[in-house]
Image 1 (cartoon, rainbow, N blue to C red):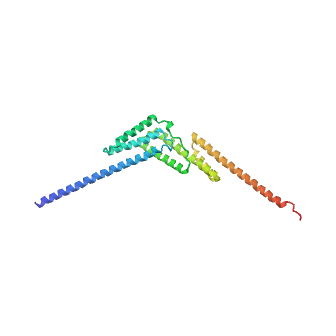
Image 2 (cartoon, rainbow, N blue to C red):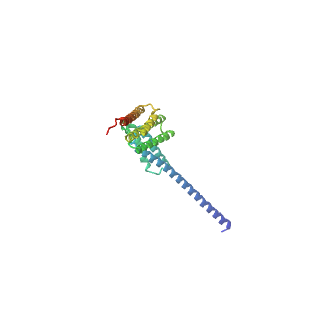
Image 3 (cartoon, helix red, strand yellow):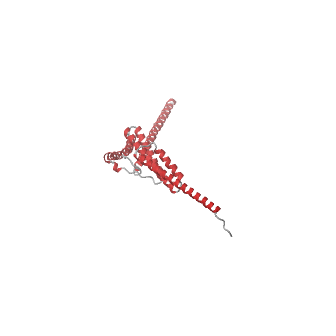
Length: 253
């Protein structure tokens, strides 16, 4: 075998090896990109289903539940497009489509969970975090054109109202706790803060809550004034008793 032929065969072999490695690396990159894309969709589905599962903690409207389920549906459909070989996805897509249909046709205001006043600071914080996540989701869905503008405006305002109510109800609870511990200064600070927050609001709940906070604040002021008056009367009495002792007739022994 001639040397040029050997060199040509070796060169061809090198080209084949390099070409094979390039193809393998390209396929690995594609597979890695696909897995990353699928992982992103799975994370979105998990987070959204968690939000749906918290519907018993807050009042969820029909529009909000439909939006959340449609978010799950879009992620499942995107997964199916990314990985058509996954046979578990079509049944899940049909199931979510059916859930959305049921919500749109049958969900009514009677099905909405009533608002529950948080009983602890921890519970209030958890509810506020949930509202914040819901607001982020509907804002993202609206920006992607999957949540109509009017529905977004209405739902965002409703969630802000829930957020306000959680804060104010927690202020009332903390103020009552402070009163029970005779920490009247702390109670007054909390009530004044709540009144300031409500100053720019003009709806039924805000007006009712503002009146309640002002009544509580007035009761504390009246209690403090009565305490001060009682203390003043006691001081006057002690001073008078001291004078009586000083000027009373001296006994003769």
